[in-house]
Length: 277
Length: 303
Image (tube, each protein chain N blue to C red):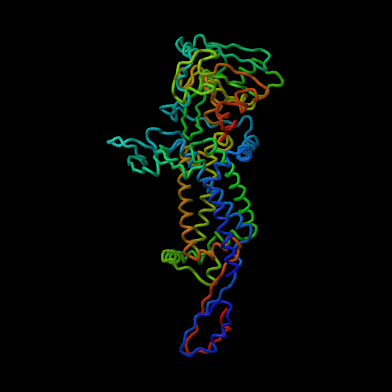
């Protein structure tokens, strides 16, 4: 049994290695640079396959009136603490103007009335949060492609970036989670610069028929908790892509100049830019 | 008892005529080809990472529902925590209207010396701390490894005929299902040529795991993807996205149960022989022959 004894040693060693890798090593791997790069390989493969399989027009499933969730769970910011936003909300968003700028021939400033006057689309879709839950809602809004076509994209346009009203945190600390503090409009607040929510999608998703800027939810004007006055619906992706409180749409040729460069508030905190899974 | 390697004749020369002699022959049998062995261990690593990162993902919203959308006030199962009447924090698992106190394990457990409200404890999630983004990265990378490894296994298994031998029971074996269940319950394991093949309970179990449970994990996983939903309406196959998520969780539990039983049976049916079989491919078959008293011992009959 000499032979077996050696094997037993090798086996024990291998099992020990696997065990320690699983228990302690994984977090160290994920923390290292090469580990992070390796881990994102899975996401890269996901994006590649989704681009391969998803045609520009394949639609997310649309539901019936009876499927609508009695309560559409608001998540993330549910009441923006920003003074500027509060003033807008107080006046029923009468002074709200959606700005469309960046790589466009004709920058736009559209009021809610302007947006409602444009062609609209209504869709009953399922909202899938990255956390795992789902809710079904009926959305009415103007197709994003409609707005972008009016602004006329420049040839080097690649991405559509959404700048939102809600401050998520202060650069350099402050404002934890749902702790709502009064935030002065504009920069230079005593506890740092406010980081407001931002998101981005590419032109394939921007011109997808179900990608809309929604102003109505379940037949009523969008409530503040769900993103009033305007939120993005990009139905083939997870919830955090559906930016709420959209104030400004910037057309860009890259994402490196946005936030920390990953294309969105949550993307800069480790989540996938293409959130199709 | 004559040990392997000793020629049976050596024993027969000194035996008395009323003596019964058990002759045990150990024969080396090449049981698992390299592809099967490699696929087995890679699969183990994948499933371990998928389980642990999956529990991390589950912790982000530790409740299960049935249908397309979440019925937040009536989950099928929820792992949470609350306070007892005396004001002590406790972890609970709610299944329908029942609540089970699971303090220390589920809902409330100790992480880095601190009592923390979290569904699954830190020691079993990947990463250990609450970090959904990193958990998802681990999950998707190893989901790819699991799929590629599984495809290699299936293609090789079908092409070489290994798969049919392993997971398709023969008709005569199905009739002996009852006997096989009895053998398993009494932990009596086949010897000799019988041990070369998987018995009917093994083939049926591996059939269910390989053809049903593992593909089900992949399909229910894909059914949760809003992107993939626009390609294939997989959620309808499972009764909605939240049902798919629930099934994903249930099948995970079945796979954990399978693994526990599998490891237990590996241990009691000859741990070392089984491990050597899955590491080097070589498995020892023991054949026992008992000579009839009074008859001339004929080593030629021992085969």
